[in-house]
Length: 437
Ligand code: SF4
Ligand code: SF4
Image (tube, rainbow, N blue to C red):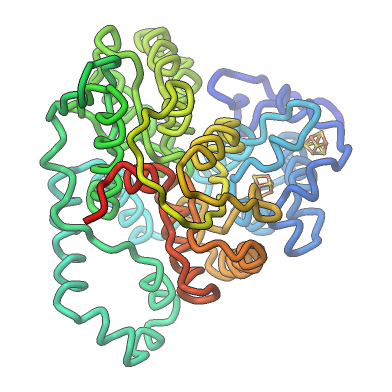
């Protein structure tokens, strides 16, 4: 491939807003990433493999138009970064696909209603506690009133086409929400050994309120005073993955300002997808002289909950759980943050847990942020294969490390599995600390 005449600038992009040529040039076309790529495994199509996508990005960087075909191949990518782990040449594929999508987003002509909806969703609803609470209450009433059960049982949702499929993946609104706990401090159980800041996410405050509570409890049990910073916001992952980096940067600055780093030993998240973006803040704010250094300091203290707990070691006082467990790697933990040993170490250390590794545990389950909503067919195909893989372990509980993966796996257990329980690592630890009632 001839070198592009476009000049690389900071923040992953060249001067035309596409992927940096220096990043593209790291690919030596060896194909060692192909078998790690879920879309290539499903379709066997080169242009839906990492190598094929990089080839197409190169063509665009060299003047080819951004065609509908190009957009389609980029959209079908899960951004799971399995290829990054497999690549021996250090190709920063996550940066490449982010930049490619940002460039597409800048050039594509969406209809006004679609633009307004996306903008409202990503710039207004998700970062707003008030609007999310109102939406969460609506969802809670829909579910608690029995209306959802009625629609599902009567098959009426099928009348709504893709909306019906999306509804099947909608999370449960967990009332009371976690939002009122933002701004509070939770003391350590016993002697305080650490002081940590907990970033509670955005939608998770509604759909994973119990997970957030379990996270705080487990940290307390392990000698942490837990502060939930009052001024925190959404991490920006959804915006960044949808090609709205400006919004991602805005949210990054809010979160950095919300945490007084000198006061904390670590900043914790329980969502691998968020953690992956939170650890990219330095990169995201590379061009921002006012924030670049603070962003680097923020990233240095950022820890996934499994990473932090495995490093400090779990305190004793747990009861035997007597359960068989398998672990699904969350892509943004295993590939985005290169953390796969820590959650396994924690699970194996729990009393009464029989750990059974599934084949291809690090291949995406099809969740991938909002991928399962917008690419339902491929996500469903991946989920069915994932459930087959899980079935070989005969495990009673499927454990993972990201709320989005939990939703996808819950749907899998319901639709294609044996109704297995799906838990976050921290929820199983929390159960072990809870006395039998
Ligand atoms: S990010 Fe995932 S889906 Fe996309 S090319 Fe890489 S392995 Fe394939
Ligand atoms: S991305 Fe890496 S593994 Fe894949 S073809 Fe390029 S150099 Fe090889």
